[in-house]
Image (cartoon, rainbow, N blue to C red; front, top):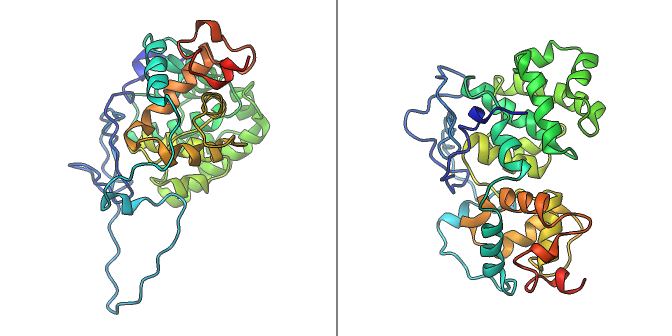
Length: 308
């Protein structure tokens, strides 16, 4: 399993910023002169890019609808949602109380615990992304084991590219869809080496363009590796529980639709908390099959529990 001392990235206070965010004091250019200081979750080390010089000729600007751009939110006052679930605040308080022990698998084997805290920041960020790619359709215990085997050989972009597919498959087995993940890991690692100097992108749009990286992984990578809450990371646990609690206005058929529905009403300051909170709740109480409703503090507030 992953070592407890590998959890330095799991500090509290993740900053809520948009793509125009500051990279913090002392951040140098990407890919050069990095120090091997701990990559705290709330103040992840980042190397800024220089902004392009403005054009000499002004052009008529067009407003583009980009799926993950939220720059306008900084200049507009927060809007009250047109709809929000009944009793959601009490439901949230109850889940926090049930999760106060922080003893679910995600709390000690999640992505924040599966990287090498002594590695340079760029390498740690790569390990974060790789652990997320391995975690899809895979239990935290299995992902942690695969990461431990990879790290024992020195887990970097170069080492992965120098590892043959058969050996890589043996190292990550039995993660779900391991054969496909071997291909995606190799393809993504090559792109990171060629386009990003061995680092990972610092935007959701660029992350989801990588082979084998979905929206949930991208939002978690932004939070853990870059210290930015870019959106709600919705996996099968969050998708299931949000629908059971009635946290979507209508039933949603996919995690991405659930993410969009939650972001419509859930206060932004709670976005970074929801994934870990609900994943652990789903691992211990709100199980996919035979949920433990009798021991749940929300049993009288949950539409799904009342319907059993």
